[in-house]
Image 1 (cartoon, one colour):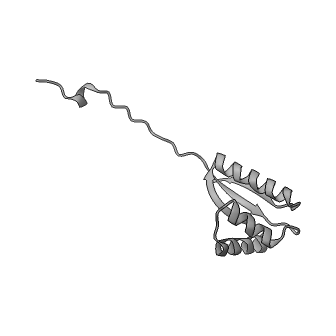
Image 2 (cartoon, helix red, strand yellow):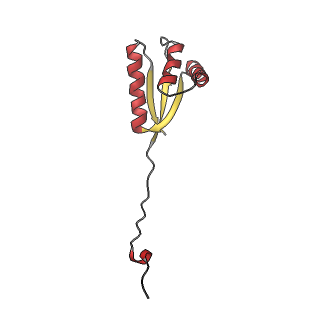
Image 3 (tube, one colour):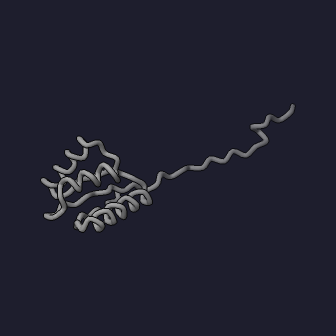
Length: 100
């Protein structure tokens, strides 16, 4: 009796592990304008105006707000973009990563 293709091949099952995910969090300060925070949220995190406004108010009232959850490389890039954008406008706005 002839062997089928399935019997002749070796089945390899790889278990793919999801990459670690990180929260990108903006921290409130007393100097960065609310308009600039909204601009950052729209530009870097692609939030709508309404989402940006609500998140900016959360950051202002509670001291911090989560902008998104990303794999490490993307999260780190977004933190660098926030810092660069803030530095160019001479604001002390800070973004941090938090592993989930």
